Length: 327
Image (cartoon, rainbow, N blue to C red):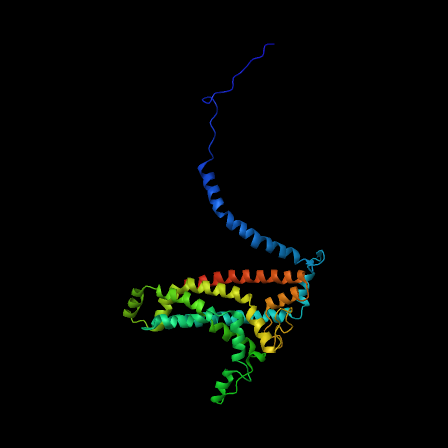
């Protein structure tokens, strides 16, 4: 048989490469720009969340291999843990009281600054400065100011014949004292509300005044609808932050009790006095880093995440209905 020799196709006869469709190239371009964010979300959110869910079904002490225990951690949390109910109640109390108090204080302060004719910049700086104070230093200062024996607050009250309470040393006054601390440092929210108030169109106020609207009606029908997105943002972020309320409660309990732990391990005074300041994150921290029960601590963390997610969804829906009815 005679071999048939064939020449390779020339450049002119080679099939042309197909270029990827424009839509596919556009998707790949968008994905390349989103890649850093996707990697960050996966590494710092999805992986820790899935790991926490897995470890919540195990007995784990950081030293031995995790042992699968099923729903035992959750059963103990909801039926047997004596401190879980106290910690959850204290945290919900802070959410119900501290979040609205901070929003109202910040809004009133912003409205006061808007109404000032002179010295607005100076007073804005004065009201914002407390927000720059480190939480630990601010809490220590408040505990000393409200010291029932030597603090200046009770000293001033005594001038008017008022017998001041025990503040941070009283189970009935410890949480309200922390609320006072929270409303003192509202500079961050104040700036947001101030920007929103300055953005309200002045012709709307002028039209409402010509129609005979009172100050309360102008706030109800002009200011409030314009502030609705900002109020929603402040409410949602405030609830999420308060559900994680940790630093101020831990420092106040340690300083007020007179036993401050500095680099010597986990403080045994969390919740002082009488577990009145024991918040849910504090209880989680004690379970994980004092008793090394990481499986149970992860179960607490998963429940906290679900509660925060559920409360946020409810707030988004209810607030939109309420704001929609206000318009």
